[in-house]
Length: 298
Length: 265
Image (cartoon, rainbow over all chains, first blue to last red; front, side, top):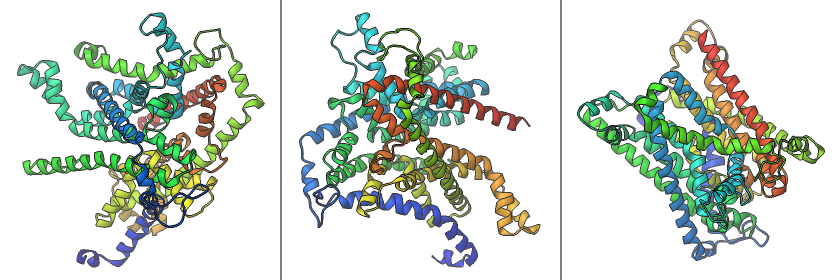
């Protein structure tokens, strides 16, 4: 506090004036609404949608609905699987990006980023067309006898997983590449000289070397995956539903807003866990680096 | 590239698979937009009929929703460019507790899942009994755009030499002149990159708009979504997507060229 008071007044005022617009806006339209989700989950439902008067635990009692644990577990399971696959793909691609020369690298980066620039809905929809019962993909697989005449590619968990990996893999590639760019590839040559096979060197030297990027990739993929809505909505069907679909159903079908708020609170808690984990990891890492006396710049 | 292939066959193979995976559905979609068949299961010959349908009266509301998306995108990106730039300035200049909290407020909207942001704003507007109209959508878009602009400008500020501000003041420029003539031009690439990102995010957003909007006000992604619900409309979406893709590729190429010539001079 004393340090703040010692600062000259105009400087302090300038800080407030430059902080206020964005901080004020995000406080009103982001922080308060987010906390409001939790508060409003303790309201009764209004007779015509919206929220009723007084307080009620009904929405939370309804969370005991036996379909919810199944959906929540599916959400977590599919998101973790998608994250793992995205990172497994992101590691070799990030490695190659880090190793290639400037020209190849800029072309490859552009190729990874361009699908980002096309409408997300359209990209998901493209898979729906591909996997459609009368679509190209299934017909081809059936005609080659890979799958049976009656196998459906669409509207199941596998379709959701496939499209999640498709949609989120750039989120894994980019942070791993950002780490790989700073990685000292001479270390790999050293490991090879000392007798490690290239795969061993990749696992024991490169992967730990880009662990920061991998952590960032986990957060960047896992969190949007947990909050997926469009993907299971378009390709999931009833057996591929995730928690996002349940939230939307409560809002748009039953118009039971407190129920939707309670579900959103559950989702919020589930998504906060990886963020806290990443923060803790980051802190532990920076402490470890600090102890070693190396530079702690990030 | 060839030496890379020789030295890292597995990594090159994995990258090729990843890229094929990323582009395959898009390629099939483009091909199907020229396919006479409605379901794209088989090739029934080249046809421009879906494009004709797209430009006929039948698809008038698609173009209307595109216009709505563009208006919201422009307003949201301009407002967030102003707010985000000021925020980045404060974050870069001051090292206080206040700025730590400020950074948290800027960072969290980026990691928060869209659906949480959408439902939270919807609950907020419903609780306050605010009409969920065009303004509500624009407010929501500004909210998720500010953070991206702030981080883009912050990256640019990291190479910014604070001494030029002092120099301008020493040479007699007042505070306003310093901002307009010195600071903003130096930060312009960061501000523009952030604004462009904000614009594309706004144009692309489905989930947040879906929750926030009331009846009516279909932006382009919402219109596309309602079209995906009707199998009959599939080929028209393919045609529209192909046009949007062409537009995206052309603008990426153009921006690349622009930045390349600038760095060459």
